[in-house]
Image (cartoon, rainbow, N blue to C red; front, side):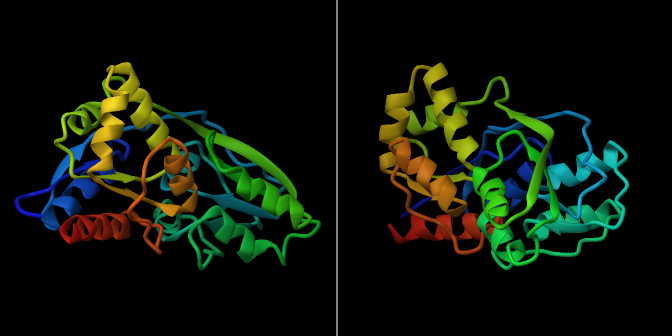
Amino acid sequence: MSGTPTVAVFRPDDDRLERAVELLAELGAEPAPDPMLAVEPTDATPRTDADYVLFTSKTGAELVSEAGWEPGDETVCAIGPATADALRAEGYAVDLVPEEFTSSGLVAALESRVDGARVEVARSDHGSAVLLEGLEDAGAYVHETILYRLVRPEGSGESAELAADGDLDAVCFTSSLTVEHFLAAAAERGVQEAALEGLEAATVGVIGEPTAETAAGRGLEVDVVPDEATFEALARETVAAIDDE
């Protein structure tokens, strides 16, 4: 591939998007930032009677702090290092981070411990059923608290038009919802079919198998699924895959 590749990134419009843009630029790409997620807090906090409290995002960690959550004796679990770092930055101790930074990884880390235990899952309204079902199968009494809702920002979809015009070399989808919101934005702009055709010639990178399954189910051919479920790994491997084509 010659020239500077254009890579779309869909992170929420906060420091995550800023860091993603900086990283893509460092990797030699031209970032096309197009936030596909916006956060609507519910001001809820985890229940106080749980043996385990599970957090699945940096956003959740920050929101419970803002809402004044004060943990007791429960075991605090983070789905991955970014969530753990965010919890610690807010002054919370983190007791467990799974080896695999996914819902199934959390289940694998906890399934031998939670039989008969009360487990609180504190997350967005679009969390994977894998986590709840896996913990229930392990014998836990599971309760879910919705800390925030994820919505599609107004004005999103510039990347869909780039894809439709054949001007997008790659995309970095960071969740199933970013895939769904990208296609919804494309449809809203009347370019969904053309955007899908444009992505056939682009490199499609996704975080994790659930996102890969969503993308494939919506007609996208996935090229990159990094072993490590972090944006840095996704960006590096996606840009490298562009160069290999």
